[in-house]
Amino acid sequence: MDIRTSVKEGVVTIQPHGDIDMNTSPVLREELKSHYKDETRAILTDLSKVKYMDSSGIATFVECLQWQKSNNKTFVLYAMAPNIHGVFEMAKLDSIFNIVATEADALKLVG
Image (cartoon, rainbow, N blue to C red; front, top):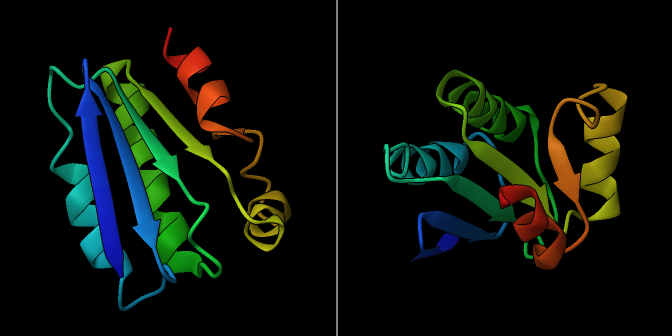
């Protein structure tokens, strides 16, 4: 998995390229955790280049959700493929996470 990251004015955008599974989710988790800082206002995750995600990927994002709630930050997933969105829906996680269609929509949640 390749992960591209950008930071602008306290907003971190993470874009993983490839599958998020039990072999790659630890790499993604470490990249996300490296941005759990006071100066980080939000973490936006662009999933447009991810075609498959297993439960370890979801667990990685649940950890980010915990960071969001305990630090009053914003965590958003966007550009999710229909099959991945379906996994979140089946697990009833689509109502817990901020999931939007585009980066522009994600930036609106940052405020």
